[in-house]
Length: 354
Image 1 (cartoon, rainbow, N blue to C red):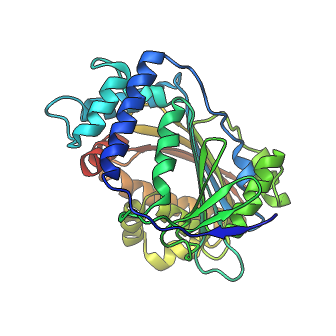
Image 2: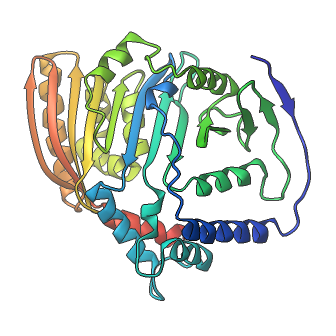
């Protein structure tokens, strides 16, 4: 596949103002047009790599009651003079999409987020690929992508031309742990740790290649019910289990480590060979998970179950955990678990970022 690197530099006066005006105009047009166009949502397994150690998928549909509840909470937090959000432009845009009395977030669905972490023999930290598809209102994703090829000073980032896509080498792209190589694939926005990983994924995307590059990942993927709101796979290599948990919620992991012992947690997690999960958002505050661990021995399974009960008690002490039920057979542990506290986290996020 031919590669050609381009580097241009120019400044755009009043770019932020024009960008704001453009998205506001687009939102008004979308509301008036009543368009029902949708972006095609790609199969997540397309973005797997031979070095993949984890796959995380989150998806939402307009019919999903859990996400509707979550979006209602977000909408109420943003709306009105007393809303926690302070950015008047965001509020104006979201209001105009559907009107003052309706939830504008619902127009964004269906949507999907995918994260794949790769860990090669040469790397100390996982290299992330992230893929986002906002299918319900393609204009938002198109506009966001248009704004990503320039830095805060208006200078264009370097680009790499592939046969089927243009890669934007955003600031920090030299560090593969940041995942700053950006492209668009039929409307879907994807960020990769390197141009090599991007080229590999683009080729799979063009061919519609959904088969896992490795048998181990393929076998684990075949055990999952992918109709859930979230599902995923972890293959534990060189501490990747703990790294994934930190990415999901560093604060929860830090508190758990402090309670059960950092060395003990690492030792027990090192006995985990793989983990799969399926989960559903049942309200704006709670997700129910089914988690399956494969450990090295039955003894390791027993020790893992004991530690997880201690972790659950820690999380429950500050409102982050509900019920937990465990069962096991040989070296496999099955866990039904309720995670709580998402309502407070969402409102806090809106307060900080809008």
